[in-house]
Image (cartoon, rainbow, N blue to C red; front, side):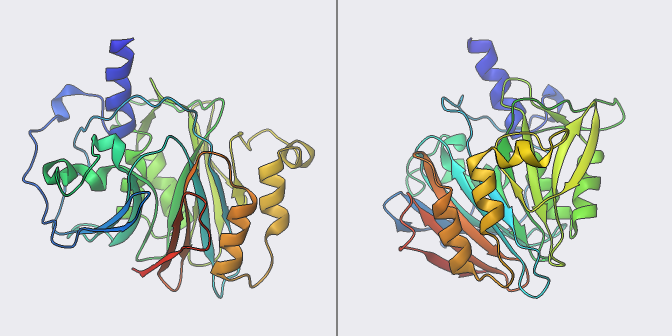
Length: 303
């Protein structure tokens, strides 16, 4: 059991090869760190670069990922929204701007860094950019994850292996469109060992969205506006509609819906363990985030 936990720590966060492990870097400048609410939700602007291929460790999860994600296809004001349904833990809205990648904003579950109080443990925030569970970059590309029962990623020796959360950092740093995001996945082996298999919803500023899934070792991008906790590949409309959250999300989408309507729709698909709800404006750069299903208490930011 202890070995399985160690494997999971490495897999979800980054490469599993020992050669890529590096000593901790200096703690980030935490001058921008501030607490937003009593979840607690924190925000911080990470100054400087980071090694996006560095190993970090994280605790073994105890509750299955839930999560509901959807995107509007309105090319005028496209939105990307998600509920993160998971164990209670401190969270952070993190802004990054690496010299060799796109600026982005992302949500981080601080328990995966072993952080309970960011002000008291600034050295642990060094790796915060490496564990985004959803986010949006300056190109208007957004991505988030959700657990599924099965995923069959391929493995090729000519591609680096990264964890199932780390790939989100690579996408945010390097992709500006759904097509480019798919290519980032194709350029890497995704390792789910020790953790739940996942799929991902991605959307861009043109209003296009797709679920990134793994079928028989191949990366597929299925056009869709919603994703929850079942694989879309190989399912028909009736099977998808049988899932209450998927049906509610897709039926609730409407042309021209604004961020408030999107946040209300997240409220319609909330679960008992919803930790945060966030709406990203893919053209406006706006970020609206609520914690603990308190949809009347929304924190507003702009990338």
